[in-house]
Image (tube, rainbow, N blue to C red):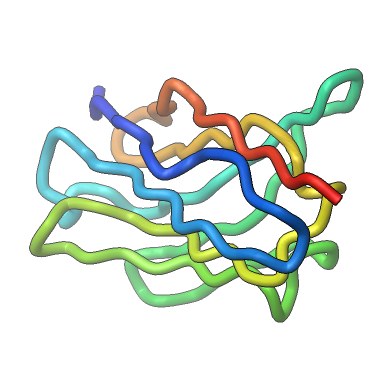
Length: 114
């Protein structure tokens, strides 16, 4: 199972930007898909973005045009660039990676103030 460590969350005002990182414990070449979910208080976990090893992406409608997912195989790291943040983006963000099994990061809090 891949060990994932997230970083980059924090507090930002509306309209600001953050970049989340998800560092994997093994080569990205063994990972087919990486992605991010988020969960706000009292709400279900929501799929935010995914990126396959072939370069295909998925974005939730709520983040299209504002968030960008990418991966750096040389650094074994995936990123979620979040621009034009809104208060409704406030949530704990979890990265995941799919190899033989699905692995999860520990989560990182993103808080957007109005």
